[in-house]
Length: 77
Length: 150
Image (cartoon, rainbow over all chains, first blue to last red; front, side):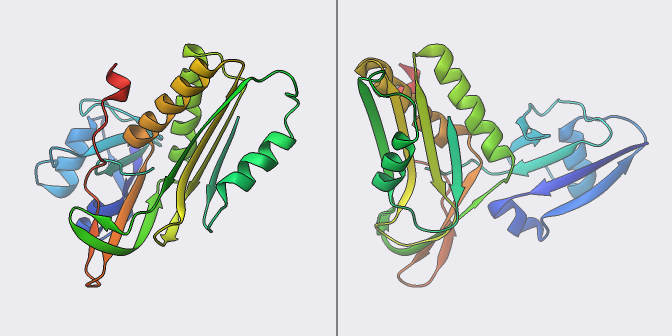
């Protein structure tokens, strides 16, 4: 059993209507598959993804306990 | 090396002075390079009267620490200070301060610019502007800079 936390930030959070949720899976899948499983829509092209607060590529496989964050391009500074 | 994420307005020169006073660097540094980013009252052709800065707590600090570590590998830096605002911000208020202390100016200039550009590209902050019309909108991208592609 794999349990992960999903987090959303900024405009993506507003579009989705929530800031976080928990997902339970039977097998490890990629972060791209996580998005598609939960949202059933293509991941927006410019979306950035972080696992446990480190940037990852879309084909990164998740592990139990991971925090997976999806967010738009950053605009600080 | 110090990273501060602050929710209230800060005075950059006081931050620099206070930080420098507590450093045990007297006689060691010959250069201090400073960048201060300040909120404008215009963007993309519109008048902006307020801004809210959101961030991903924890990841922000982690990314900024990593950026400083990479800069330390590239240049000889004695000390670094980053202060970044979050929350509600008004025009003329500082958003970000980067200050770098080093023995020589080239290291200070280059490291300061590198850290700022990397912060712009990788630190998870997001700006939402409130226009004079009271319409709000997310800033979708930062202004281009090719400084770190040199």
